[in-house]
Length: 222
Image (cartoon, rainbow, N blue to C red):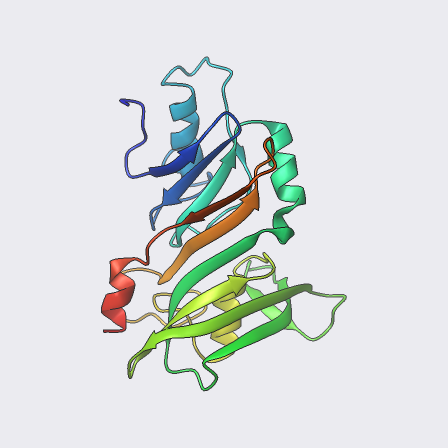
């Protein structure tokens, strides 16, 4: 127990995978500026039980942005990593987000081809040869005069897909300083990975994980 990483809730663990609930503000993996305050570093130390010479390790399957919270899966073997990544598009993934404004259509699908410029900013293009096909489904759960809470189906997994799709449709995610507008009083990016369903790489059984909606999201739409 003493090796359990602080600020990380482990939802499930076996010999093949670790599923965690990542808090907002924590990187998935290292950057040039930050090496140790990451989910990958903390979980690597955990599986090694504090012994840096241990051969135990974890493998990154997918990523969440630093300010996005929620369900994140790591593999314990390279074989598991490859299985999950090769089948990733077939798994069901749902997010919850709070976006600015009220949507005219309370349920719908957003599709576009997404690409990235030299400044690492993602945007939509009309040319299928220049961008990656991206599809986002949504339905409104709750709304007030200023914000709408959405349940989102992530049909594809393009970088910053949810943030870009809603920003380009005039409803940026609350707290999004890159694709929205900086607004005082917003404590965090209002985006959370809420649900995932996938096939276990060893048992081949369907596994489902779901977390609650962050309390702060309810505050925004109260």
